[in-house]
Image (spheres, rainbow, N blue to C red):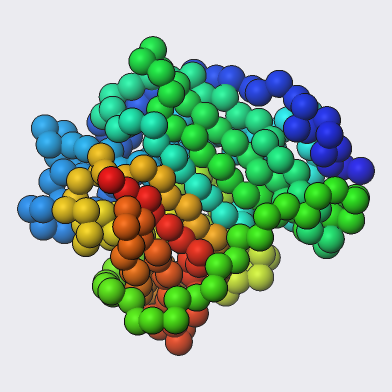
Length: 281
């Protein structure tokens, strides 16, 4: 078996030191569409800068997931790997400039029958204590059926009432080219020939770019642009997005929590992000 679930979960975390500064934060924010209008200076101007918590997915060039995939007990074909979901929990606001020790490990391995699901956990801490915890849910096609636990279901019933807020966000034609400078160099998002080999007629946008755009939209729409109010954020990747499209972001508000669904306007509201929740103060 390419995946030895018991060995993978028992393996010691892999640690590396990462660092970032205002340029990394600004580049990330530009990559998720920040910069249009004076209200955006909190994302783009170093003297007013704050850090959107989803930056944790690219801090250190996003190498946490790579470290998890190289854990003992995991030997998979990357062509069979799909990013199924992502969660981020921040333990305190992320500083504009920082250095931290980042640890990566396989927190769980689930058996979905036709696929295995790896939960790759990345934690970061600096001299003052924990900063964030990321969980990436990675589907590995063809690696299920080994008799392991099936794991929790990520599906949540679609809300039966109309959303409280709906906003639309346009994706620039060059947005994937800019976002990839934060560390995800997969040619699927830049090279048309590679995209065709992967089954797409043109390059697709990074799922984590859509993830960041959505959190920014919720923050700006419901939290007064104050990123320090965000406690956690999770999603299930339900479909692809192409540069040049428009995201329709639907929000249902509750006590200290926002339910979100994201769809692609130009493709008959095809689902993009599902089962998405932002917890906040």
